[in-house]
Image 1 (cartoon, rainbow, N blue to C red):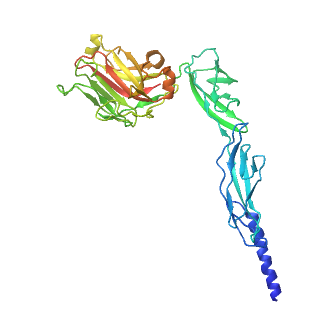
Image 2: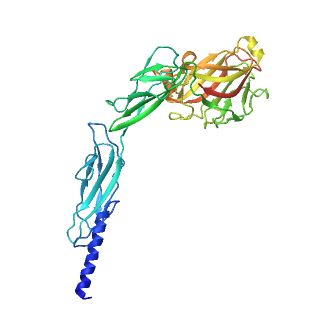
Image 3: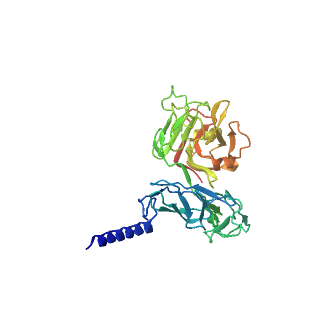
Length: 406
């Protein structure tokens, strides 16, 4: 083979390789040869943005460099999804956006390009769908309402339990006893989001939400919440609280109601040095504790001793301390809901204390305009306190089983 034929074959192979490299492209760096030194283009991933709500448009910067230097130009391969102006991409709608960064070559370097392909998600819609609460099974319809962070986009309602309830437009019709499941959704070319409400109808009850399921030891619940008490114990070793895995017994040692209180914290909270509020966040909201949704009652199984019932002064004050924090007179304070009830019998009885009917805001921490239901739906229950309002020496409270909301 002549020297001239050999040179021709080498040149042909080089051109074939250059064509192959140009066809592959993408992925953050590629190059091509066309009569100069080979260079590569490094194109940083521009994805991560979502479509914005019109008339706003989401823009993202495009950054790429060529190993041979020189200016980079950008172009969109999917102009219906994204467009390019200079070094800025505009995201028009959800879909796949493909952009190519190109260095045209020159100054002894070949042309080179690199492409990026990324998904453009829809605008994430957050829907607030207030639960209408427990509904009587009757012929009255209920108008559903919801709001979102995407004003101007219609929120649609659908029932996934048509044997319990049906929905037409914004009108809910009750069909039978049970948990009615309704989905509120926004679904457009640029925005999407859903949320679900579970609405008890007739004899149906909301799902139970445990504050505690049992007791690990005398100072801790199964969930890891601390248990503590006030008490004048120095003269009476038998006056105290005690636990089994399923019961908590609190026995009075005085007739001073300021001392006959015990408290139980939500999971993960423990008091320091037996100071009841020291487990709560002292500089902001406490996030530990069950979050009330459609539950309506605080429920527990309580037994008291007959001698105390016989006095007719066996009232018990119950405090629900929420995670809602505020400084009051320079001191940490948590919003508290309170009720007082009288056990009807000494024997173990399940009590249901309704939030709306029984409780009131006893400590607002200097805040004004608070709404009890809104507080419960916004902040967790971080601590429960039980106080004997008029204790007698040896009066007892025995809690058995879980304490829960339903």
